[in-house]
Length: 327
Image (cartoon, rainbow, N blue to C red; front, side, top):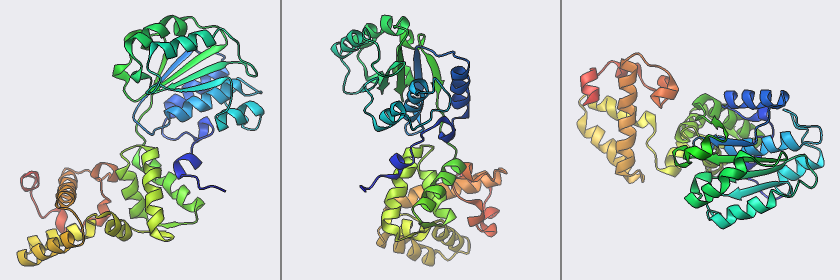
């Protein structure tokens, strides 16, 4: 079997599998259960948080042979075809490469024909903000009063670029960044599926670097797995990606506090000789002192600190005043 990246393999296939978007999930499920199905939806939010996945799940929910249902079966011919991307009644369009008014005119001609094998003909337009002004204008009447069997689902990372005239004709759902703990738990499950051992601090770092995007987290996870030889550790990540480990930073700061400046300079030189860039050193030291400043203010949430608080030695937490840390 061909290799499948984690982001694709772990793509949610049901609303219940969509993590971090509870409001969106509950609202759409209730509207389907009550038969209140809109003719146009607009999904907005950061990259990699589940907009396109939700659009496909919604398409399955509406066109499932047992539907419309909030829990599509996933095994009927309609569900399977939508999952595989070859359903004739669910048309996915890349807004970035179909920007002209002629592309929209083609859609306007197609909507006159009813779906072939499903209840609805569904158009999913990704990155809809990339459409030209004339293309948006050509869409207006179609999405306001489409045939009863046509549904539009738009997805965008830049809501402010979608004209208000389009937004006012759609049910809008804003997708949020996914919290760090949720991403870390998903990464742990992915590691378990691959039978790869993963240290908690390494998963924490991957989750932090993804900045709330599940797809980014899975992509970085795949890269780390490729060089970790069955066991993901922070030491391997630091050495392969040229990072400064928090233990190394804490050691250098401790040396400075004890006025062992010569040893601290040698430790920094060792980092640079190991391939860590000066820019990365500055970034990591800044993050460390930022974390100390937060701890000084009484904040101990790892997601806010950006590091695991138990990795910072107690001796360093009160060594500086707030003014020194800010400087």
